[in-house]
Length: 230
Image (cartoon, rainbow, N blue to C red):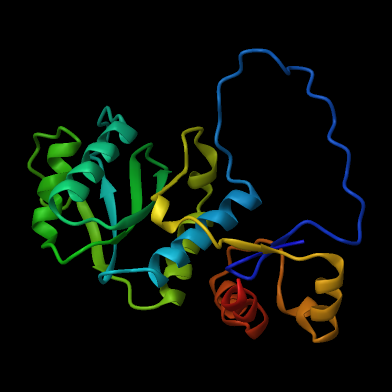
């Protein structure tokens, strides 16, 4: 049984694992896709929580946008933007999520642990990284401080509940290595039985994108205790 930092779990100690059906296309050259699986969404949420708890500065959220009908190459643009922040502006860690809107526009949703920087300066850095010449003043939107761990969970949930976030085939998430580690705890049957007797079974759930549930689970004493000890 795997318990994630958000309080969600995967696996079961009570049901035998289901056999994986053979893939008739195995070995063929298939285009790689990046679906939002339950485990990947749980990892992303856990690393966002790690970013906030390990922060060296005030955590900021923002959205990197493109204009309509812009022929964007999102990941090279994001990599240039990130590298500039790391080299010149003290970016310590980050998590990012790529969305494609209903109008087929790319957006990057970011959480950044970095020193203070004016929104206008961030906007200029993004325009340069994305090789835009339109001089837009609002290429970066919703640039604000994130004030609590529950606000982090809310921000992540807002992305994960969008249908467009799931539909595109590009890589959905990137996280800096500083957010890695301690994302989950593995419990054996004996440990799980002990916590079940204390009422923990009713306190966690499979992956859900509901903010209220996610926040309540994350603050649950059972989950907090597991990760304090790990």
